[in-house]
Image (cartoon, rainbow, N blue to C red; front, side, top):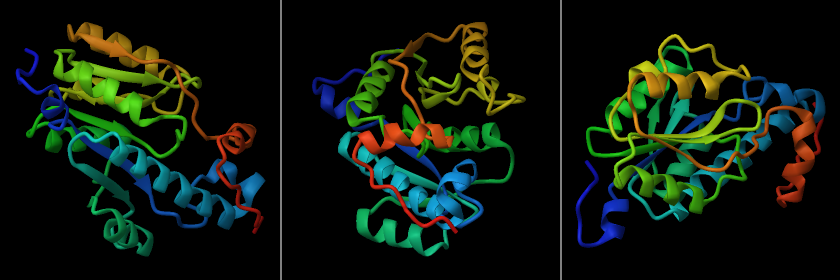
Length: 220
C-alpha cells in the first residue's frame, strides 16, 4: 500500500538512504584502478567518490543518511565525514555483498522504505534518489537504477527482500537481469530508472574527468 499523507514531501522524508563505502586504504580501495592511479591515487579517488555520494544523498532531502563502512568505522576519514556532515556511521557486517546489503535493509526498513547506494556512481544525482523514493512511497515494492556493466547502482525496498540478495554471483554482467527475474518471481512491483555508469576500470576515468572530478596524479 502506498503511504498516505497530505504532504508528499513528508512522505519522501520517511525514505532513508544507506551509503555503502570502503575505507580509503591504499591497496583496499578501487583496486582495479591501481594500474592507472597507483595504490595511493586509487585511495584518494575513493575519498572523493565517497564525499560525492554522501553529499548527493544529503542533497536529495529525503530521510536520514547512514554511511555503512568497511572494514570498520574507526578510519579517520569516516570520523571526519561524520563530524562534517552529521551522517551516522555503521560497520558493514561480515558476509558477501548480498548479506551486507540485506543487513542494511533489515535495519532501515523497520522505519520505512529505504534506498541503498554505493560510492562508484558519481553520475547518480539527487533527482535519481528522489524519483526512486517517490516510486517507493507510491507503492512500488522495489526500485533499481541499472548500471551499464550489468549490475545496478541503486536499489530501494519497502520491506527487506532476502531473495534478491542471497546466493547471488556478484560483479558479473548478469546481476541486474538475475535480480529482475528474482523480483518478478517474488511478485514484487518494481520500478527502474535510467541506466547509469559507474567507475570500475581505468577506461571509465575519462567520463569521470568530464564530470569535473579532479584526478589523483600520484602513481605509487
